[in-house]
Image (cartoon, rainbow, N blue to C red):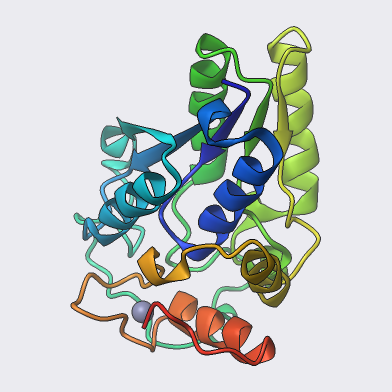
Length: 225
Ligand SMILES: [Zn+2]
């Protein structure tokens, strides 16, 4: 194995997987899908479908226990509803703090776990799908360029310079991510982005809105809705 891809079954990480497969070949790519106590299993099912499409090995990891005390609105135990407005609107009420769908230090935790698994499987790089729109306004601070540089440094040093972290979209918008995925023929029809677990994407949550805008910016219909 050469590359581990942190893989949720959503649009961004599917594009990352497509890139890693292009770069290394499916046999050299390991996808890691993490359960964290989310309200539904749609994204895990999507992850399985996309991994099968590419013929890459998929490992799953359950870290839900770590978020047992969190009231993040994505989590099963939360008292909060998932907001049905754009991130920009959500951020007007947060006083510079992350949005309610921010899972506490999720990328930090996932990337640390991924580093241990990557080293055990001989991987030299971890890909993850952070992009600039998610970091905007501090909505998801663990998607920022500064966070990415710091965690890359930590993983590189802590692995004895054997492993690095690659966030190919960290300086790019979600529209750029879709443009790259279209070039790669990523199977977006198999992905799931919506925070709700309905039959179809809700179209109203922050991530549904961002996804729709990203496809619109590329002038193509979203095959996943
Ligand atoms: Zn939605």
